[in-house]
Amino acid sequence: MALLDYAFAILYYTFWCIGVLVFMCHSTRPLATLFRYFKKPLPQFKELYGRKNEPSWVVLIGLDDLTLEYGRLLADQGFQLLICKDLSSPHRFSSAKFHEIKVEGSIEEITFDSAECTKPECFKHLQVALEDKNLALIVCNIDYMSDSNEASSNLNSVQKTVELNCTTFGLIMRTILPYVRENKARCGILNVTSMMGVEGFPTYATYCGAQAYQNFMTIGLWKFVQEKADCLSYQPYIVRKNTFENVESFFAISPR
Image (cartoon, rainbow, N blue to C red; front, side, top):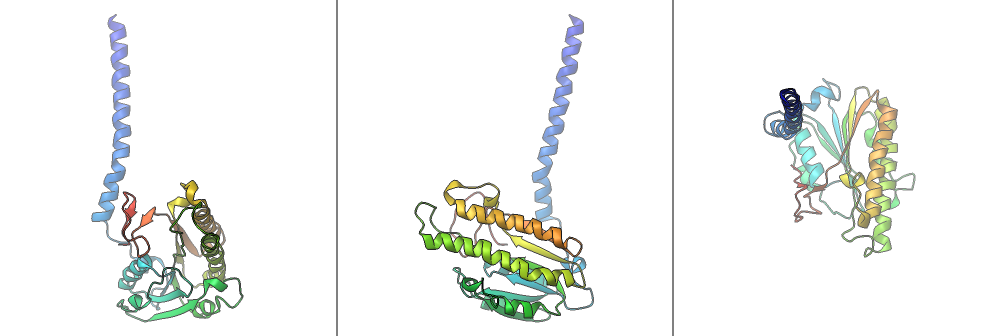
């Protein structure tokens, strides 16, 4: 009987120790997140991307509150900004806010029209602007989501979701590809996608599929440029920007 008690005690304390270790491993994740948020300084992208002693450029594609915050952050680190405005963007975000950012060098602005993205001349201004520039970071936030779900949205809304999130996004990635390959220094590509492309919502199937496409396109792009660039698909759930500023959700984050 005593032997069984000892065996039971050994098993009990073994599993207790394992449980404590598992709890500690999982509890360190939120603590590490809080530490990074409050204590760890922002990465100095100037040390990672672009040429050290030459003007380095950040390309911002798709204007909204989120890219505006990226512009402010990167301008503070000494980068110059190239703003790419979509003339047919449903967000109607003013580029004047970007020109108010304090930049050591200069801010340039070009335009394209996603409604005519299949025409060869659509991204001509982007191609000209990228020539002879020392690229450091490319931030692409091409995003459109209908206010209503699949059942109640009209065909034009569904078509716009596919055209903006798939066709326009894919052609932009193809446009920047040769310039990234020919860039003299290592650069970074940040594509703002959505967690809805991973954890799909059946009532927003078109948008979820489009975001999944952007995610896989980012992975595919990295396969071609991994020796010259780092690629990241950033997948928040909901960002309280100008299009969803009043949304109330536990998963909603601010652009900052």
